[in-house]
Amino acid sequence: MIIDATGTAGRLIFPNSARISPSARPFFPALNRPSKTSPAPFNPASIQPFPVSQPTPDYSPVTFGAWALAPYGIIFAMKTKKHMILAWVAASKAAMTAFAAILFCSVTGCVALSPDRPDGFVPLAEAVPDAILEIRYYSTYNFVGDRIDGYEQPCAILTKEAAKALKAASDECVKRGYRLKIYDAYRPQRAVAHFVRWADDVGDTRMKPHFYPNLDKSVLFKQGYIAERSGHSRGSTVDLTLFNMKTGKEVDMGGTFDWFGKESHPSYRNITKDQFANRMLLREIMTTHGFKPIDEEWWHFTLKDEPYPDTYFDFPVKQSN
Image 1 (cartoon, helix red, strand yellow):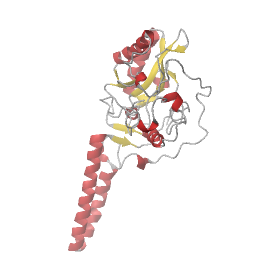
Image 2 (image 1 turned 90 degrees about the horizontal axis):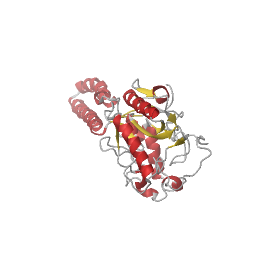
Image 3 (image 1 turned 120 degrees about the vertical axis):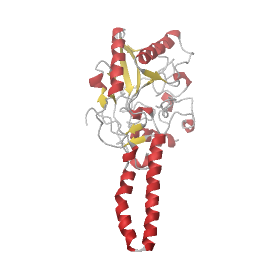
Image 4 (image 1 turned 90 degrees about the vertical axis):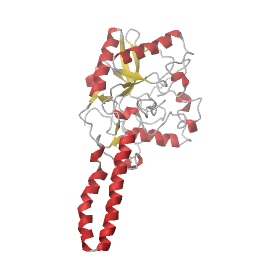
């Protein structure tokens, strides 16, 4: 699984899926069984070295802090010349810290840590009612083997712009006798941090036979399957497949979601002609309605004109605030 850390390049922290070999796909009777253990508490400090803000970096907590402390520094400095010099040094350091935080956000994008869902996001159950939801990171059937941090309910969320485009794609699918099946959409930054912690624990290979049997877990960072940022956290990326309404089954794509390996590349040809054609059908429908694919995952699509290209959100996945 690749994750779209760059947005334009399309490589993310999987962004962000695993594939089971074309010849066999294991059956998991407890597909959506919640984990028996509670997720580890989220630590915002693990995400980014600087306090960060909502989309506009100029209003970061660091900036406000620097301005708020400035009057105290001036008053203190007026008492003695020595203290004036010390206050000037302290103010300079505060200003430099604020500048560094703003520059960091401008270059890498900010992480918005608000616990509430912004007005610009909508649940797909409301925006795209024909879509089938199988939210893998709410279940234990994923490459980690546990429910992922931040997935509080088995629902999918996207920005309003992405949801509108996905509704148009869904309508076309229905006309052709298919429905969209959603595996993942918006992904909180805390979920990405969970992936990173899991990847660091090289001894946890419970799901290796099902998602990365041909890879050593130690190479997942190096080969780009796991990263510290995901395009999904910007809210306009979706992982999905086609569901055939006539057969009542998923369309055979020659591999499954979240399979780490070249078999998941849309261009992979060591599959049947029908399987390849199915991948191209999904690609055609999504690109026609404003989404762009990536080279590593046949199921991964991002809205071309995403509204928050530089902001990574962290509000939890749930149907309502």
